[in-house]
Length: 204
Image (cartoon, rainbow, N blue to C red; front, side, top):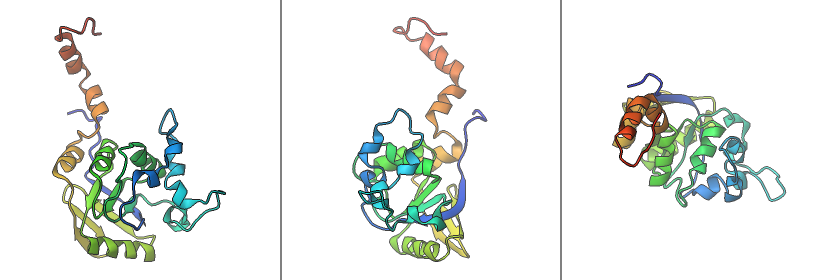
């Protein structure tokens, strides 16, 4: 395995709570912000319509709260990321600064899109999640630790027995989540395979 491929066994940082079930990808990044050539700059539009009025006046939303401005762990409730399969949603969160999402449950495609960016989606029961959200709201400076390999979320002196999908955990811990980097690290093997394909005429 190439050393260029990053493994993700552990994520830590301060957290930001976003409460509510069934938060869909259109809430995470409204469709009108998807007309971009690259994903760069999407972070500023994360939760835009929940954060601003039609006149661009800020609303009361955790992503507008300066106490959470440098947070890297997002704490959510059930069925987060449902709706469309737009990959712009996790791209916007990643560019806002989110490195891990802890919640009750996630839409399957959203979780897959997060994995492609190296963002773990970690689940725990609703009681544990609500306790964590309350702790973060009361202690925005508190560090939250997400152990992907051992499936534990810890904060203060507490530990949550969390769950990471087996395939996701294996991909993150073994460093095979970044398929582009994986192909680049095995460029000669890819070229050799291509040379043996009858429908590929020329391979450098």
